[in-house]
Image (cartoon, rainbow, N blue to C red):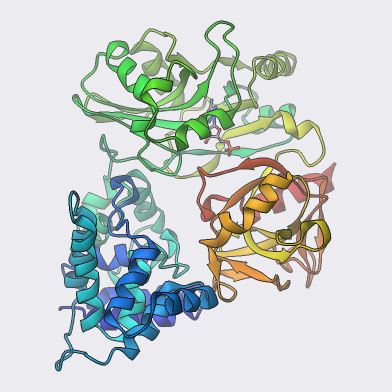
Length: 584
Ligand code: AMP
């Protein structure tokens, strides 16, 4: 059956109004049941995307241009539209108002189906070259003229990359499971997505009930695998105990997660968030072919800048800066040489290694290349002696690392795509002071500044992500650790995430002056975690009518631009740290 775009918009409207995960799932599932071979397009739209992240497809239309187009189809001046945008903070709502005011509508309203709108929007992203802007605007204008006001709202939001329905990938997967009556373990479908994070592909397989293809999903070079992550504990003896008395310990390098794919011809590099970053690492790409002589592979590691004279490792921020400087990297690679410390292999010469035990994967990795200045193995110790492990940890710190990652050497140690589990446990230098680890908190709101901070924000309302509930919860107000320069640049930096009201996936008792869609992630340290009635993190789970909050939080100066909102620290982590604190 053909799903009409206006039906989709009606459902999106209902989804926007609720934060209840079950309700979101069932609204989306009902829509998916009606779909046909357009199911892939539907799920991409629900993600607010036109393709998986790794394809790097963006509609690429600036709000300024869309405002011009909206002015062109209505009797409104660009300035008036700008004003409405400043008032609502959402160009979608403005487009809805503008579309309602267009007098010269075609006599017969068109009934766009999902495929038509999706294909039109996608074609916008593929137009390049001379006159491309006008061609893109013409497609957008045509859509707006012939669509209903509600359709205009969502078309415009998708065009600006700000759909923000508040549904996570996990909710979309739950909706697919319910709509297409998958009867196996939900974890199998989640794993298929983590190994091949293309929601459109998964939706088609589910719709066509190709269960076997889902069960045997394996990685494929050029498609990023969701990275495996580590749990944390705050003492080395505890880690050794948890690992069964013996484990491998690797340096925890402080750089950028780097997944390298090679298919026999091309090389692609993906970030922790599955975005392609190949063009930022021309030196690594060049050196790959002379280092590795294989048919195909997927490697996992951490890229760190270093000083070739002294071998000294530099901090993470230098790579971030380099990563941001997209276009003039070629000449600069000598300036900041990079080394990839490899610690895992997921795929080799046409075969998935995900189910191979960690020890065997490491041996494979060691056997396929000779270390050189661009590629090295992560330093490692396999031990059962606390004293030896402590020494190794101390050395990791003096060698410029953040700490160590313990890895289980038992037989049952597959590479668990997208999972944070006890097979890997991190132990960082920071654990030895105050709270232990830093947390990566997402900005949910801001309070206006006074006095010296007039014109800037006085404090930010920060949150964590509750994976069970699919909502963001508040943990502290943050106003310390900002330089004046950063502080006064924040309103501008945050402006694109502004929301007119509290986003539906945010749970908060506090009412900041400005709300933001959870997007910008900041690294924060604190003295301890306390019970607090005004924060919603793990609300009522430790103490009735109270949540958890950070005491004396301080911004470390590091923006985690490599993380999206949902990649921030989780409620469960805060609860874990709180429980450890209580035990001490
Ligand atoms: P965190 O970001 O604090 O959760 O720590 C996990 C991150 O540590 C991973 O995503 C990697 O980017 C990084 N890392 C550095 N060295 C290693 C290693 N030897 N094994 C696994 N992860 C590592």
